Length: 136
Image 1 (spheres, rainbow, N blue to C red):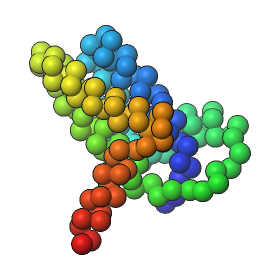
Image 2: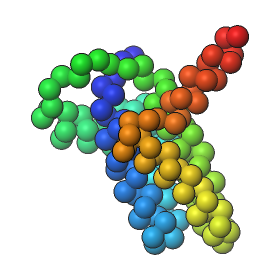
Image 3: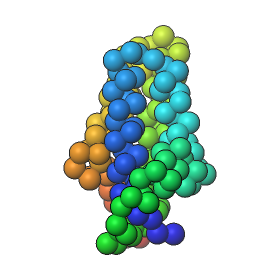
Image 4: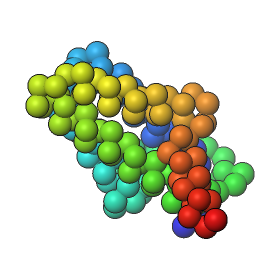
């Protein structure tokens, strides 16, 4: 399946804003919501993520068609990585291990910001490296 590469970047902008809010407020509940968003994108598919839906309905119709499409598997893998960090951070916040919540959130934020600001998807690159390693 091929997707518009601008969709995951839009989602990264929203994710960046949510994760900044988590770091400012220390809200494990907000991180839990973001973790559900990651889970939907990773396990159900990017089209079922609320951010993917918002892009498809509100943003995409206002843009010119994409010049190229990309494989959906690397961004889905990236959502899975985000899910892992979100889950660890959520457990940290709710277990009272604030440093764990902050650390996991900060790492997820760094990856989301790289995609939002520079179009560099760290999880996508991890996916490609793993694929190359497995086929060698």
